[in-house]
Every structure is written in structure tokens, then in C-alpha cells.
Length: 266
Image 1 (cartoon, rainbow, N blue to C red):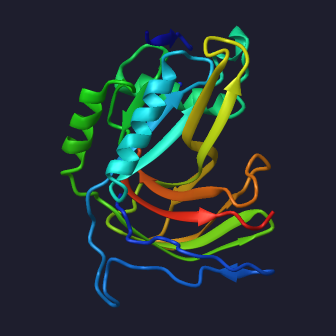
Image 2: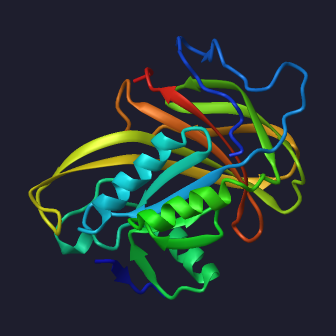
């Protein structure tokens, strides 16, 4: 059953971090690039799947599992993000990953896409389309369809490091940057929760691809620096993903890059 509430809102850059060694200021020692040195990086296909979900929704665990399957099946092209919303917290279980800004983001998407209200589980694809997040047929179709499109923008990340519970990096972008924004997203790989109350009471729920921090700014130049804080909810040695997305004035995603991190700083 779809849960609904009315509310009156890759380019895979070829980088994968394999190891970290930290001191006061330590950068990534090695990165593997899909592009030879000196070759211009071309935009490639990507599929950004933004799932709006909640531990308080009995329909959501199936969507959480499906999203993780898509990430595992298409690790380079699929960008999996789970935004936990807060509007089901009132029924007895407060989702520890829920944030009101996630609800606002979902409402903004739905208003743009012509859907009145919010519902869970909902997945938004590249900021352009939405459907029920547990619908396997539509999910496969979306990945196949959007996976054929080349991104407008290509992103290259470098100088990635962690200091004082903050990740900072440099980026360079090819393709038009006018009226674009840079979204920096920090994603927690996986958590298991014993839900005590609400619709999922007495169930052990596995959540993956949990968005724990996000910020955005206007993209004024084709290169620059970015940073994002590591919130207290992240524990030592947990696997994280840093995702950098480019979006246009319509909130459509035009480019993406990601790296996998291991938090060893706490």
C-alpha cells in the first residue's frame, strides 16, 4: 500500500577511493581514473535515483531493498540516495534519519512534476520523473531508459580529504554552467534498525544509501572547491559515499560524480 500525505515541496567520473591514511590533513593516496592522463573527460550516462522513504511506512522496506539491488547491479551508472521524510513520525516511531528538509525537497519535486502532495515510497529519476519506489518493472525501465542518455555535464573530482569531521574536495566541470547548481551529498552506506513501534514494529529494517548531509550552491565557474560536514550520526569506520551532482533551474540533474569513503577520523 502506498502511503500518501498532502503537504501545502553520473556522470560517473571514474574515481573510486581504495584506501585512506589520515593525520592532521591527509588526502587520498590513490585514485583510479577511467580516463588516461591528459584526455578530456566526456559526459557519460548516469541514473540518479532519489528515494523518499521512512521507517514508519510499512510499504517502504521493499523499495529500500529494490534501490540497493539497482545500485549493486549497476554500480557505476546508478546513484542511489534515500531521503528519509518526517511526516510518518507521528504514528509512533521517529525515524532517526528523517529530516523536514527531505520532506520539503520531495514536495518541491512533486509540485514541479504535477503531483499534488507527497507519498512513500516515491523515487524521482534524474529530477525528471517519479513513480512508486517498490515498482520493480518501472525501476528497471527507468534505469534502462535514462541509462542511455548522455549527461550535459561531466565532473572530475580531486584533492579529496577529511579534517575535523569535514570532507573537502576540488571539482572541475565540462559543459555549460549557466544557471546551474552544485549539490554535495553525503550518503551512509547501510544501517540496521530494530523498529519498536509504528507500522514496522517488531521488524528489523535494513536501510541503505541514507542521505545524512547535503548542501548546494550556485555553479558560477567550471572549477572550484566544495566541502561537507560529517554529522555526528556517522560512526567510525562506516562506509560513506560522497556524491556531487549538477542540476539546472528545473531541478533536473545534468551531471554526477561519486567516490566511496571510509570514515576513520572519529
